[in-house]
Length: 118
Length: 118
DNA sequence: GCATTATAGAACCTTCTAGTTCTGGAACTG
DNA sequence: CAGTTCCAGAACTAGAAGGTTCTATAATGC
Image 1 (cartoon, protein in one colour):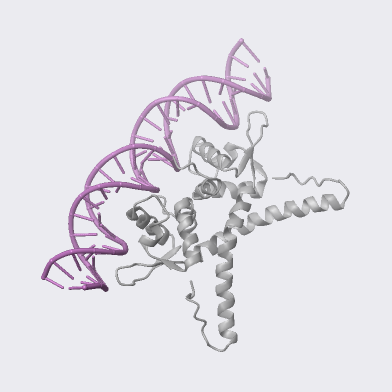
Image 2 (cartoon, rainbow over the protein chains, first blue to last red):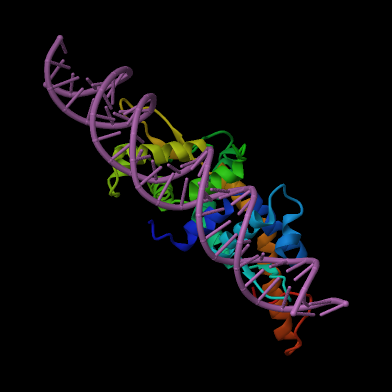
């Protein structure tokens, strides 16, 4: 209904600890099948399979074929997009940090451009 | 039900274009009331108010008091946490980039440590 | 061909989400 | 005080999310 854009799908996919754990495993191991990915969790393989589908829809994972196995691999492109999205906000907190530094350097003369510590 | 951790709440809050747009406005304008934030959207002020509540629960926004207005301000701490979470993945794509560079430098001798272009 | 393994489809349930409307309270304006 | 403005609480709804189980299919091993 929301014609979900890429960034929205990415954030939605990341908003689940199980899925983030799957990504961590893939980052560390390179690739893994559904059953391999399922072992650490108290969930049915089917549930893990569905989580992988969500990750795949978000472009965070691609699947290959190895006999019956459908090994998943990490794809970082959506994360690069998140990184880019963060850029403008990163500027905010770095500005605040340097503003604080400036205050210290200037021996307790607080700047007053309408923002505080965050 | 899921005892949602901070990162999960943050990603869930960011997984909505309206909420991300609100954050953008706050980043640009410094602060804004519910009615001010509502104007660009085809939504009732109440809906925007609820979005702000979600952002506030995720720690992405704090609210002050100015007469009847409850101006919201951006708080970047959860975004810093996202940035930190990204760090390990950033290493992945930077490694892949430098690996590609190395391949080019080595005059088309592909590395074979089990990863390709992503 | 038969049994086994790995996975996806289908149906179902329960909980959460994003929105609405209507009501009410708190703070300003005159 | 009366009216207005800004906002949150309450109740409701439709649909999405996350899980289950049971069934089906595809590939391998014998």
